[in-house]
Image 1: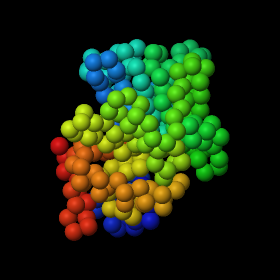
Image 2: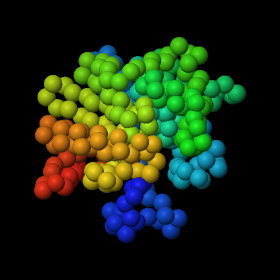
Image 3: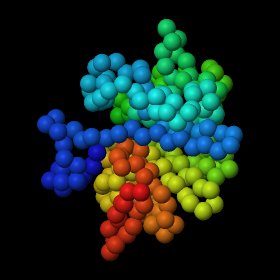
Length: 253
Ligand SMILES: [Zn+2]
């Protein structure tokens, strides 16, 4: 998770278990106004087999639909699904198995991805193949619910998607604003608060120097504009970033 950072440094921040694993969550974001119900990410979903669950260390059953229900949202009420990228831990809940058919979990929603991510997920190579599970996204094409975007798009008033090459070519971040406050959903561009220091970049990133360049631009903005920052793989989930003598700090809100 921490790339070139030696274990003697990262294990103080994030102690590993006996198998050298660290705990990570798979956070989804629910955004609602009067007429739209937007879901960002769908977690690992219900389709992983026992071997995949063991290999990826996925504990427990998926919680997304129960948590949506707890917020009064039923699957057919979701109008838009955004995946920041198409790795299984972000897109797995897009679809489920109904007998031998694969169907969209959110039948009335449009599903929004970057066009480059769609292209790369559908043509993986030896390095990227393990992270893309075709059943998570391929069935969506036939439903006509796919919406492919390029670069930066205000997908709804106040909800902006920006492609940031780094983790993959087509990873996108999400920024939500009501005109006063801005919330930034990091995606795997910065998976958790331990990735605030500039060189702490996961070895999974396909373009780590692009991640670095984006961090140099985005982190000062997050500080200056007092963004609420939500990390994809962290608990705590929401906080603000401050900077003291060149070091970034995260405080939960
Ligand atoms: Zn991820």
